[in-house]
Amino acid sequence: MIKGRKLAFIGSGFMGESLVRGLIVSKTVSPGNIIVSDTRRQAVESLVKKYKVKGAADNTEAVQGSEIIVLCVKPDCVGDVIKKLGRKLNRGKLIISIAAGVQLNSLVSCLPKGARIVRAMPNMAAMVGQSATAICAGGGADENDVAATRLIFDAVGKSVVVRESLMDAVTGLSGSGPAYVFMFLEALTDAGVRCGLARDVAAELAGQTLYGSALLAKETGEHPAALKDRITSPGGTTIAGIASFEENGFRSAVIKAVEAATARSKELGK
Image 1 (cartoon, rainbow, N blue to C red):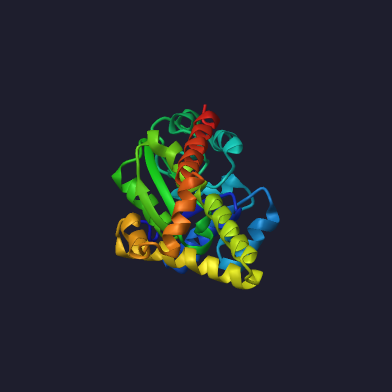
Image 2 (tube, rainbow, N blue to C red):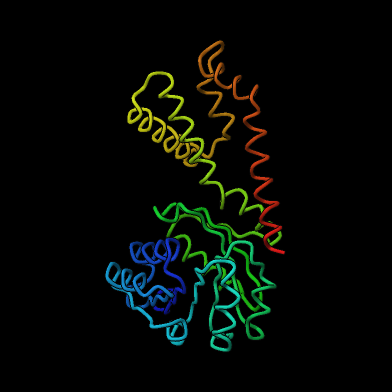
């Protein structure tokens, strides 16, 4: 689907680099078929040196010979980037945008008629090859374009396809989700310190607990409540902790956080 095709990455920040690294490490795309561009010349040179990809002098050079264009630029810049490239982003190229909150109709309005455009919402875990990414298609994009996009993002984690109307919810859940997890990890570590553990020990135990628990839930496919019940003995320590969570509105706070982030994503998209 994408082997042998030439990819251009416009923007070489942490997400652009994560995608380049993932594609090369997974051998999904060879370094010689990847070209990167960025307003920061040093960022381009860094990727060229580390991954043996090609570096472009500017965005125009990057897209000229490429079949798939991945726009890894900030939401407030993506429109200008597309407009400046103009007709070079024609129907012969697949355009993928990771600009959070920027809707397909806004992207299509900046592109030549019939352009093939796909939106993707990855998250920070792409840096370690474990992103959760949601994808939706617009413009002239077809099933093959969606499949090609999924191959790119599956190189740095797992992808799902959703309707665009759900992309704000994706942003609120998995897009912002790592920040919630980091807050919980910090709090869990601090709790261990308060209860007498050295900080490095508490941090190691908390981190491994989160990682192992998430992996267990993912690999078994069991409902989280069923897994929770396995370690919740009558009158034991776990139920005491769970009761405290419930008294302090833990689940409600998580749900409200995702709802608040979803609402904010909708506001930013208008």
